[in-house]
Length: 369
Image (tube, rainbow, N blue to C red; front, side, top):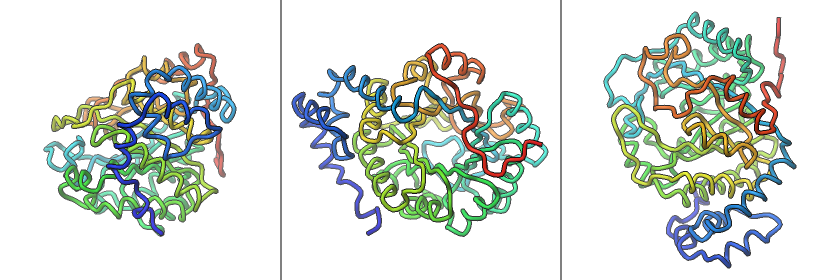
């Protein structure tokens, strides 16, 4: 059975979310381990009065599995070419601006600069334009990145297993691919044109990546497109499906909230800080051994306060435009970031919070020469 047949029914999820009471929340919190079906209860308004208890449990579970560590990574956009008409994205082909893909010389200059910042985990990102940014180009970028970084991940367009395998063989060990929304009707509304409009193609690509040999895979939904309780329940259910079939993979969950971007799209279901915190705490109560990621989409103060409460990975020093580490203002970015601090400043806060920043935790044939 494919996962599309297991996507939770939205109305059933929202009914459980609406009908949750303090008593049902307490019953879930008394359980030895919560499950994806418990998320509507843990994300409900009734759970607000139990945030402190949820935070204590989440902190304890995170420390047991991950210790007091925060892994740092840095994103690098290698291209803003895109053939999709996504209504919420700065890279959408509906927006008119000069497009760019980084040259090998620009990539290497940025790799050298980023390495001087002590960052060792790098995430390479693109829009979706395989005719201009083919798999062969991505593989070359990964091969070049591997000269400087022990851990290289990608967040690009969906591929086939054979295409993903090319990138894995080039040295990539991580794949991030967010479904954006698990509600097929909403998905089609916000993706009116381009290859990304194919809901099933994107949904099934994650398994193609798992079969291709990625060591770690990141899931998530773009928060603000749809009701957060449904999306987080669907993401958690998707994760349960994948863990059962590909237990050798290390999984992460991300919580990207929609931010301002060229085009001015306004999210129809804005997510408050309180609800975001609930999602992170609840996700840790459901999955105590999954990495939880918070990017520079979020403001510095919120990110700092969530250290130790479930989050295990933070991005730092981010730019969202190609060649952004060389000339930050030159090209249009995918979205506006909220935390503009340099990586050294993020490291200082992690240490002040009694945690250890982790720059490197993986090495597969990395040549430091």
